[in-house]
Length: 197
Picture 1 (cartoon, rainbow, N blue to C red):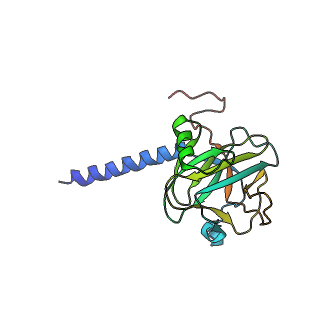
Picture 2 (tube, helix red, strand yellow; picture 1 turned 45 degrees about the vertical axis):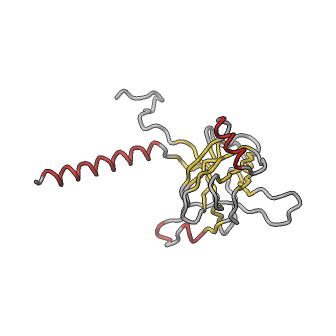
Picture 3 (cartoon, rainbow, N blue to C red; picture 1 turned 180 degrees about the horizontal axis):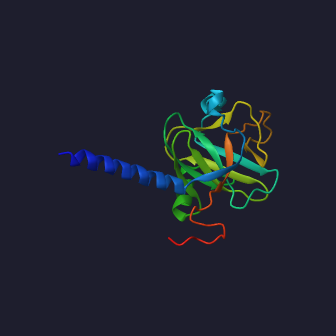
């Protein structure tokens, strides 16, 4: 009879360890951000430092680099969707927001499809020299927004803004973003070669 609780505990421990290993594979290093994570001792939470942008079905974004980003750098933006997971299509440029055209692009393999939880990070793609023009389009009904810092600061490597219509006099809105690079593989030694298992 005592073997059952022991087996159950061992099973939960094994599943937890596997989950930890899988999550670690996607770990990234943050190179730059427009809203650093506050120290725990400050008593400030991220949710106290941001507000959602105006919700909609599509968001056009423009990232401009101040300096050449590190090799393999990608830009991510924080989603604000009122507690709901969203299925998003990441399209290059600022095309007309059309769900049918976005689905055609997904099926043809030209664009990326992302499933992102509320307050999760949306991978917008690789950053290179020059500007990055991106559209984030929601496939399911219902609007979504992005987290925007209250202080609206820029990062050291660049600036991400919501694209505005030509002739707009509204001040630019900067969503919460971060520039990330993949973490080095722990199996690679100092020589740069993979270690033998």
